[in-house]
Length: 435
Image (cartoon, rainbow, N blue to C red; front, side):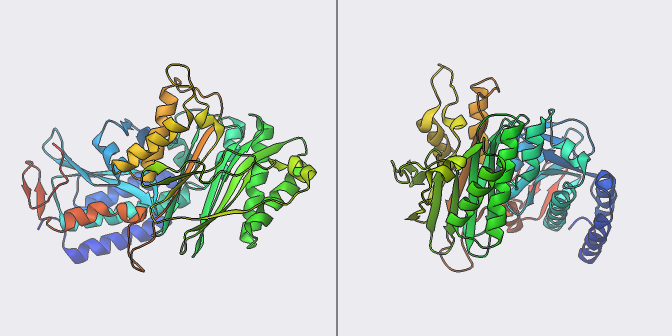
């Protein structure tokens, strides 16, 4: 076995954990360098993914790596370990940075050899760094800047500050979303949250594409959160938003869908406020009109003027079902021949990606990039997609989860791992190396 003794390694990890709490975000790279030396590896580099999930940028600055064209990118896309030999005869192990089920980036561990003990310590390091980055970027402009490749408009800055992580989940369900244009948002937004028994989600599309649109979205999100956190029912949550928009922004309105999923039973409740209906994907097929009901007024003054109570719809999902929420900027996007992307192109992309084994978050990443590429990265309208998967465990306390996928690489290499050597020879480490 190579590297420090087991007890020494755990002591180093504890020292790093103690130090990282008191370290300023700008000092994280130097702290990681110090820990890497003590751990017995050449270097550890932290890479953060940008808002559009196209590039991985070193936290300390420097050359970016493309998510779609590098082994580091493969580790990010699949939440899996990738190992490659470098030109100087060493090895680089790429491990994903994952906070819960939210993909943040990767770390690159440069070392002369890699065994299971060292790999476990690097995984622990990645887990600590993911939590630290998630907590510190709420007050660190440097961390935020590392995840940007463009200048953000004021409306986009306001809405982005309110958005939750792109992906949340547990062993029962996952909710993941993408939103474009990343730096010029108008009125689109999403929200999702989890309790012990319930997944809540909202998708919003405010009228217009300016600062007033952003304000409308911000008020709607705050209204939903306030009512939800006071344990209001779904209808009451929507009523709260109707009232506050009608009072404070009577000339604005907002379409959207509010969803509540009971994690144990699979019962899905939703209210549709003048928005495109949700889509239900079962067994890799879209069930036509399964969640389609007569439309209701948008949130705000139109709903108050209508004077009718909101209707809460309900359906019981089957294990593995996916529910898609989207704004019309997705289906109205133009493809190469000038025609609209439409529901068929939209849902077909997700079905193909998930059928090929892609995570839900990766399927949405691929889809939004496809839409952007077909329009030369210029959208006529905001495009937001939110995908919910219900996948209850087969037995209590067990079952698939995207969070488990984040640790998949450990199980793959831990069963037979002995050592990777710098000359490229492998002794027992199965199925992770890429030449």
